[in-house]
Image 1 (tube, rainbow, N blue to C red):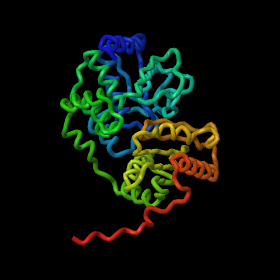
Image 2 (image 1 turned 180 degrees about the horizontal axis):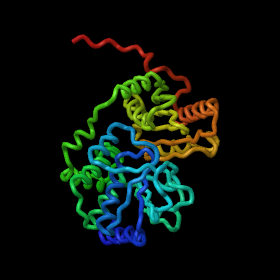
Image 3 (image 1 turned 45 degrees about the vertical axis):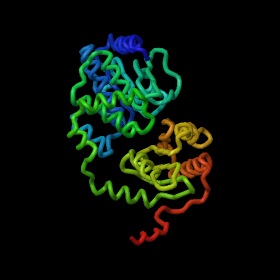
Length: 355
């Protein structure tokens, strides 16, 4: 994007809120650092240029230890979508997700005035919505960093820390799907960020329940050739599928990982791949195809990581188990893995070499 067009983009964004008095910024459900950091960035932009106060709203929970640490360390106020007065909001921005992606708590019939996201286009965008969707960017925080720079809004230490951590986590320190623009924003923000706060955010204290959950997850891992599958059952936090998929794809010889589990009235799954030329997002969309889960599923993602959710609120336990079976079977077929697997914990460890 050329400098003059970037400047116009800022003005278009601000114009979308020119008549607003009570705007709101809606993050995706169970928000991650990229959603939280970019939300904080947009709130700062609206406050600095339009003197508007926009609360950060989200559905679900913030349960991953690092994400909770981010919120607590930087004193970020988040509002539950279930408790938010939507009738009073006159302009809603949707961040790090899209109206058609389904992983948000936007009330039915409410049209966002702005959508800012770095994921691939998930569906049609309403004619009244200003959409800035940049799938070539590694993080939505990078988009907001550009907006703040173009609007000449000062990024203080607190905001720089949040934006930096959002880019850091979504791109895995620029090692995953990061563009040159992400790298430039990452380096500039790092200079301004609070390094001690970052150290505390990245290394939070973990409860014993976390280690029990990791133990239980590993007990449920099955190896199918070069694919690892974890069927987690009922979960106490929705991020468990992503954390497990991240972990088990690092097993020697693995090209793919799938973690699937139940949280409240949804069946969640996360996909990871080490294949550079493979589109995990496309695989996720195949897994929620109508022939597998009916009209209950949503999916999205990038080339190397993706996920999805299936509404199970009206389903019996047997029906949910059947969907899990179909998802795992379809996944193994798509990634060309054998149909028979073996427990990760059943392997025989080779003796350590004698020095």
